[in-house]
Length: 429
Ligand code: AMP
Ligand code: GLY
Image 1 (spheres, rainbow, N blue to C red):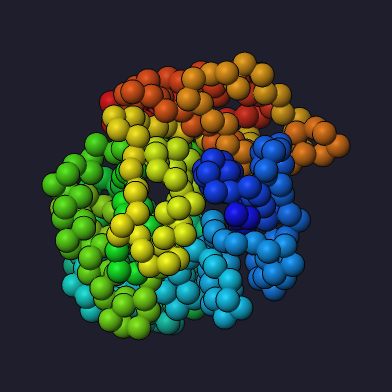
Image 2: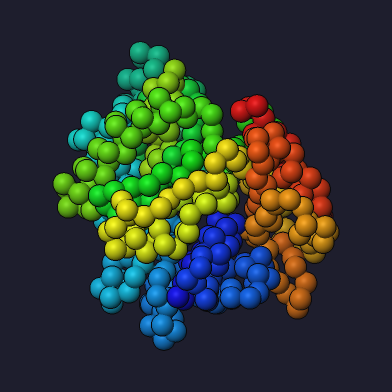
């Protein structure tokens, strides 16, 4: 089989690795990929096509006889890549444009959850600043802070403000509606109740009827140790997250996953592909913070290496609607951790083009995988090319062992300004 993976981050590097390990696969293309996927060699090669170039990707698939395409990031899903490929009779894993609104429109997702009785923060929905500001004044008079203010559309995880008082809330509505810092993504704005508790993410693969669960994971969104500083795309992750006990998982399946897939199908938006359910868990009670129509980054870098079954067989079964009878087993008793190495300055301004050195010893470290995120290969030299540069994963028989192994491997990678959090996984120990 020939498989195309779309995207350019560490998530897609991890996907390319899992796909290339499948017994039925002889060629893997990654579009556009990164320095890490370029260096994989063997059956893996990069293709210089952007994830948003839907027509170019379809043309490539038709010309090269690609059997199966897997989409990493959200943007092509929002643009309707699945609809386009399906109409051309091409096999692709992911939700349609309409179903991907679970991620691409928070207004759609909130209304959907409300209609279907799925637990989530109470919310109001606004299309102009005067109504939003009037609501904030009403909240101020009853002391209902913090308030969470979100752009409805895709903002690469940056469109969320947690306002502690009316002044901060008005500043957020002004940024969104007047300054238009996220452009049309903030034509609609959600103001919602602040949820207390701890966050975790649950990932699944679904053919719309049946679904199979990966292990639950926890991301580390803030740049600084102890969850301080600015939000980032994610600085590290681990799985399984002990916070998601079997009892919590049962509630997530009964109250969230079941009603989500059933509700989407009932409403004519049959959901297929990966689904990411971002949860807030308060005293054992889960509610939905957000849905994403894809796997998470950096969570993929821990949940995918923990999958023992053949990834591509599961993807094919997802497309064929036969997921229920297909093996989907995890490595029993294993944990995984991933530590992101970022460019100095990230998530604010940072410089690209720093030369990277990786000690060859990394290749022989037990159960370690160095996934590249923002790297590129220039004249045989590996250089930084993004905010998040690497996601270094290790497995272990315990979470502790996986964390120690991941940090040992991180110590073998260097470039000017390299930064990582020192406490990935610590809160679960
Ligand atoms: P989102 O893009 O909706 O996932 O929001 C990004 C982050 O903001 C989440 O991972 C949470 O840390 C935080 N957040 C979003 N909504 C809420 C909420 N209602 N209550 C508390 N924190 C929230
Ligand atoms: N790790 C957060 C995300 O993928 O959206």
